[in-house]
Length: 102
Length: 102
Picture 1 (cartoon, each protein chain N blue to C red):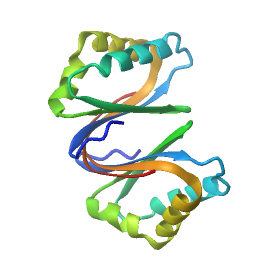
Picture 2 (tube, each protein chain N blue to C red; picture 1 turned 60 degrees about the vertical axis):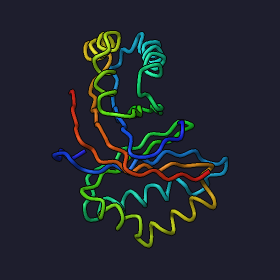
Picture 3 (cartoon, one colour; picture 1 turned 60 degrees about the horizontal axis):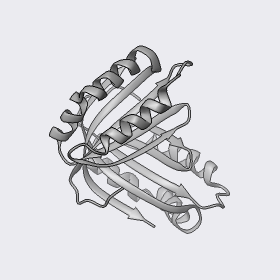
């Protein structure tokens, strides 16, 4: 992730998929390509076993709302609810501190 | 995760392991068992592919500091830096909003 000073925002998206997930991977890639070109986008992390955790990082709450309301993203969200997700949880977080070791 | 009203805290721990990770899984399990009995612990999510994302949830910043300074946890942190992690990042977050779909 690009280095940025705190505070910034994180959207933690935790999900479980249905058995049928045809088209899910392509849509995930498409949404990542779209998100990274949005105003205020900082970075992205995603890992999936049975549970999937995807975290996107944003400069402001306003940037998160704009991305949530993006028309292509809205279509993907609806398709996700109808076809792909058994369950999900979204947490909007203010990242107050960040440490790293390398 | 137990349902709890916002705001609460999340610690996002993102890590990559070295090739040698002997003893890592046992220690992870031991730390989870220890963490869930600490004051202020709310919940835990963990997923690993090449990248690992572990999120622990806490009621207050003070609870996070107490867990960080727990003696058994300190030993595990040192072992992690010396033996297991190629890199890691820790983000301390205030969870302002939470939505879910089930």
